[in-house]
Amino acid sequence: MDRSSDRLPIRGGETLASAMKQDRRWRSHLPKSSSSSISQSSRAPLIMGFLSCLAWLYVAGRLWQDSENRLLLSEILQKSTGNMPKVLTVEDKLMNLGCNEIARKSVEAEMDLTLAKSQGFLVGNTSSSTKLLAVIGVYTGFGSRLKRNVFRGSWMPRGDALKKLEDRGVVIRFVIGRSPNRGDSLDRNIDEENHQTKDFLILESHEEAAEELPKKAKYFFSAAVESWNAEFYVKVDDNINLDIDGLIEILESRRGGHGLYIGCMKSGSVISEEGQQWYEPEWWKFGDGKSYFRHAAGSLIILSNNLAQYININSASLQTYAYDDTSVGSWMMGLDATYVDNDRLCCSSSRQEKVCSVA
Image (cartoon, rainbow, N blue to C red; front, side, top):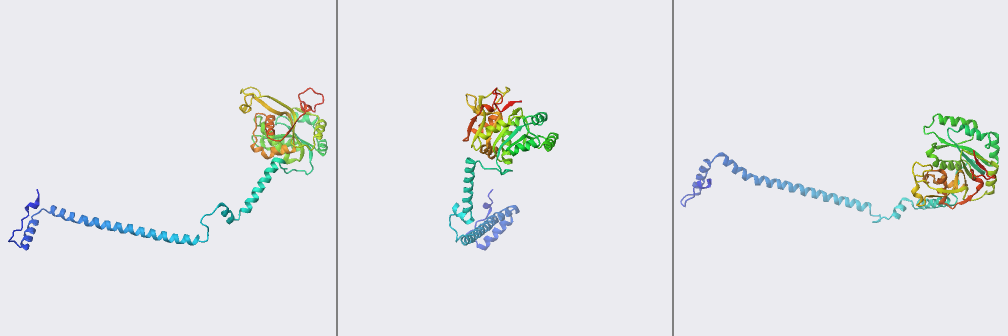
């Protein structure tokens, strides 16, 4: 019900004062709740307007402060960069750091190193300034002491005789790695034997195991190059007897040769069926014909100084295959190596003049 209809209209003869008195009397008769709601509804717009003013003042203040900060930072940046070029090139930065000359020398050094590797394959630190004729490494294992003693009593000199052979320019050493369990009885026995005979080349970084045999070639040639400066480096299996004088004759005839890869050259089928003898896990790399490239038989491999140096320098990146002879052969394929096929080095042949034979 609209309470405004209860208000009394002002008649023409009534004064304003009498009308206001009648309105006050009318309001006094209204319920208190109606009076309160009317008062609250009149204050709400005032409160909202006041809060809006406060919000506007806050936003305006922040915008003014941000503009002042930006102006200050702009002035500081202009002062600090006034003497610098707007855009710095790489050359400008190098010039400011004084690195141009250093960078040029580094590039030149890298070019010289690359050239040395490709042509001379570098000369490692050797224990002797006199160039030997050959270093012969005879592969051996932890359980082959009896076989080593047989060699020492036959074709391999011992004691003073071994020293005299070295005076002729030929060094012979048994080549062995370390036990998978470093410092165990296997290692201790080898150390003790070497202390007595002094005829070992121990490959400290190589783990002596049948499956690690292809890697042994890398470690042997690298260690031999770093220990002795020789014309040739020879790898021999531990089941081979050598005619030392005959081998020296062959090597003397090739002295001074560069890039010589000498041995009993052969090829052969790549076995791709797992479980068969001579299985090659990387068989698919050898093409549809499944035939190995030409390489020296593993019984006796001879490399000239620069080829052995190449293995030493690049050993970390050289691919190995299932067998050491094919691994060495793969390394030689990418080099300017001269293959020397000498049937006197075919240890299993029936030729009388051969310099090696199966023990």
